[in-house]
Length: 41
Length: 167
Image 1 (cartoon, rainbow over the protein chains, first blue to last red):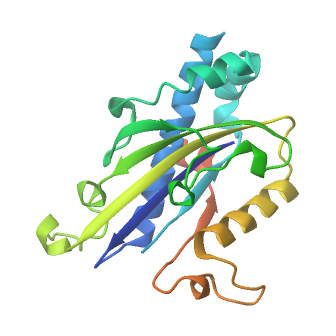
Image 2: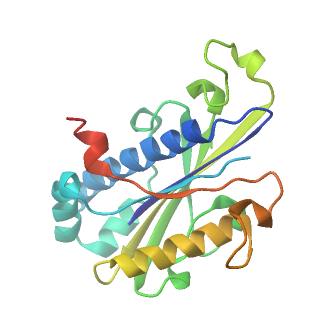
């Protein structure tokens, strides 16, 4: 399971944009997992 | 304050990654993952990933120790700098970063290795626990915001196929 968390504190927060950022991060993390797993074989 | 937690499971688009992960030696993989993801592999606005041991991490780091999840065999995590303004998060469209006002961010990435496939019930239970962990114990009929004034949290299961295959 790959999880990401993104937190923003500020005067003006766009929750949808933070969610999109977190989604981008989990996608990047899944890609990194695959590349590391290849090297670990 | 907003704290979405995106959760990704294996999806059709992740099959090659899943197969590679399943073929890898798990101990070696977890050890190799202690080397954090590089900045060039991170999305815009994220940088400086640092390995953290989930077993000793603070609650603010938002990572899950394997000992907290039944069936988990290991957990590897990174604390990551998050600059919301760099992504124009929080800024009104067309406004400058200065106009967006005070804004700080933090992020984490967490790999949890399970001894078996995660069921829908497992995932629902986990999401419920994560929601409570982010905003506090609020009771069955309380709103997510009730546990922490000014705090909004969302736990989402990410549809990877939709993101990767927009058609």
